[in-house]
Image (tube, rainbow, N blue to C red):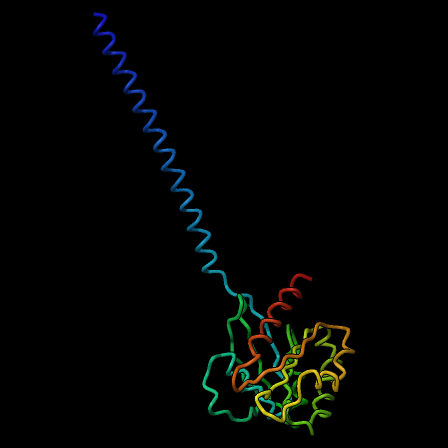
Length: 219
């Protein structure tokens, strides 16, 4: 009888242990499943989250290299470039941003229409032909007028000193001094040497743009 009771006790104990282990296993399995679902949800949100859209206005005198620069940013063929008579717009992905870049023609007859595109501009990119010294005064006047525009007040400005691949190009420091850029106090600004033809310096400038977009959004 004692042996029978002992066997019953062992059987009962084993059954309880089995049930306890089963419960623990189910709890562990449920925890892993919840963790997996949580990670999957986060990954889905990251994947589906749209890039922050930014409006960039690309201006400068005609023949400054704006369209070549835009095509370089979009990784497009730059072997055939024609003067922009109206405007070009391209969207470029960069560092978590969707950059909607508006390239407006720089001919004298088109410049009065620039102001039609000022609204909601996040960053102004101004392109200068560093090798065309005869037009430095003209391009300086146009830039000064842009910086005085109310709708562009406080908008960060990146000046691309373009065509640095040419031997006759003025260095960025000389252009900055000639345009009195050091007197700009009402916004963040940067002058960047570049060659839209070779791509040199272009990404450095766009890195500055993205950093200052982030800083501007936090303000």
